[in-house]
Image (cartoon, rainbow, N blue to C red; front, side, top):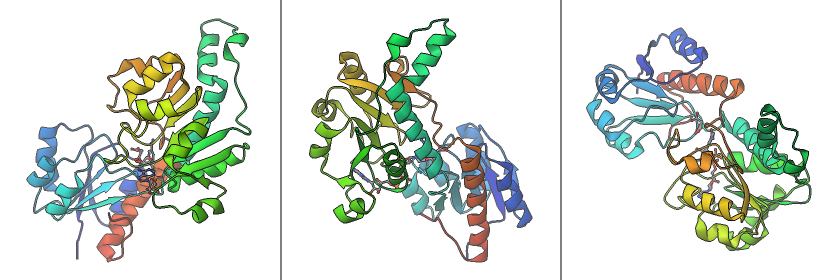
Length: 314
Ligand code: NAD
Ligand code: MLT
């Protein structure tokens, strides 16, 4: 049975995580913002490492820690900062907390839909510049408009449910969801080709994998109505940033709200600086509620692993 006696916490995490581990007799070291060289030295000294998204657990690190490191815990959903095949090759378990921040990510998505509809960030910024530009910020109601949700998993379905309360019609696409399952949530399941021309807002809630990379690109945007708005609170790379800027420039896309970027922090400033883009620094899970949940869940999973009962192993 896998036994975890020492844990390295490599990214900022709430104190609950430390308390739960220590109360279970597990030794905890906290060393955040480590360089690759520091991680190469520290990882092989621990049975487990806990990360959020800042620390990248690469195959080089996993190979160097082979034989000692038994577990990588991701306090969050996406495991794209962990080389999972390299972990498997080195007999290292990868655990995440996939449900702990879904509601926070869904609530942020809904607030971005509304912010796009009413230009809230741009109008607030203009007031700070001393303006009173009421005519510049004519918005639209979302009531009766169509929201396309791509990816009807945990976050996508929570977004659909909440935006239906605003009177939005929700259409969606997900290869593993049936028409009946979608209909039970009042979502019309359509093909992507049917979705593009109908959507007033498109929000993506898929993992970043080969099939979803550049899902929103020049071609798909061209098939959308003029004035469509795009939201990405999933992962950078699902929406092609250069294509989005081109479509914002031409006016084909009326607005975009982006939480996640191809490179973080983003090097491609044209999107961040675009007047019709609302860009925020990967805040989907940044609520005290979600952070308390991810911190305690990942710690509890490790304690349960020591007891022989575990959830959340990938
Ligand atoms: P999930 O696994 O519950 O749902 C993802 C859904 O996408 C699944 O139902 C899957 O079938 C579907 N899917 C896969 N390929 C698809 C495709 N080609 N087209 C359409 N659908 C496809 O995941 P989730 O917990 O809802 O998370 C969704 C995304 O949000 C992930 O990328 C996750 O990393 C990200 N996330 C971001 C934040 C943030 O801080 N911004 C927070 C939490 C999660
Ligand atoms: C996640 O995948 O959990 C989110 O992107 C949030 C985070 O990285 O903390």
